Amino acid sequence: MNRRLFTLASTALATFTFSTLTHAATELRVMVHSSFALPKPLLAQFEAQNGIKLAIIKGGDAGEMLNKLILTRAKPVADVVYGIDNTLQAKALAAGVIEPALPQTAGSTDAQLGDALAAVDYGFVTLNYDKAAVAKTGTPLPKTLSDLTQPAYKGWLVVPNAATSSPGYAFLLATIAGMGEEKAFAWWAQMRANGIKVVKGWSEAYYTEFSLNKGSHPLVVSYATSPAAEVFYAKTKLTESPTASLNLAGGVFRQVEGVALIKGTANKAAGLKFVDFMRSGPVQQALQTEMWMYPAVPKTALVPVMRHAVEPPAFESLAPQIIADQGPKWVARWTQVVLK
Image (cartoon, rainbow, N blue to C red; front, top):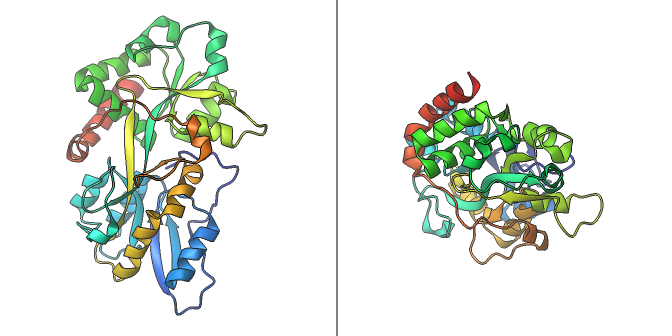
């Protein structure tokens, strides 16, 4: 899932271990999406305290990761998975790749994913805008998604492909949840006529096409935490982010990510320790500026830079089973309406 990758460099290894423990330690294979990142000392501390050797397996985008688990379910390649979210949980359960329930010791959360997944973090897919670029146009910000279909906003918006990108898919789901299926696809058709730019993934949308990064589009589908990341990684100290979120009705979707046991794992005890680890205080703090998500465990303090990541006052949602049942049809229709 190429999203929230504001770091200057990321590991290119598909599988890597952090342990300096002896070979007698229990190896725990953990499948994660491509945006997983936690400080290595924190992972090493978990290993040392629990006598567990972590083998972190990068599975690509969350959807790609789940497909790999489905294809290998007869001979699982992991014991635990992190990164399945509320858009994929029903598919994962239906495919039988994760245990249907975690013990009560996994804890509870205010961002529930059901019995099979313990929520770790959440985020909001929304529109971000380049403050300077918008000001330069002299055009007021749109107040509704419908405004974006007007000539004044022609060519403003770049979006990741809903068929190949998790944030692109989440944004599509937001429009359907907010407007209803027929009105949503009518809106997408109007946006095509009004110069919407579609690219394969979030990285290309944000770092190539977004005007903040020398592109030509002042609006981009990104995350509510992106403005905070811009401040955090700025080469000079900033008191204000150069971007902000534009939380339009029908244009905000909350993703909740969780951790689960792979069905049939022989390392259940070690796996449950990792589940608790992902919901521990140090991890809940670290993930804010490592993966640019909000902590799912209640009462976790936000790090100072997250004051630039204002949570949207409202968001769209769909039942996981509806997403599982209708999602493929919606993506196919979106492809036909927007790209063909």
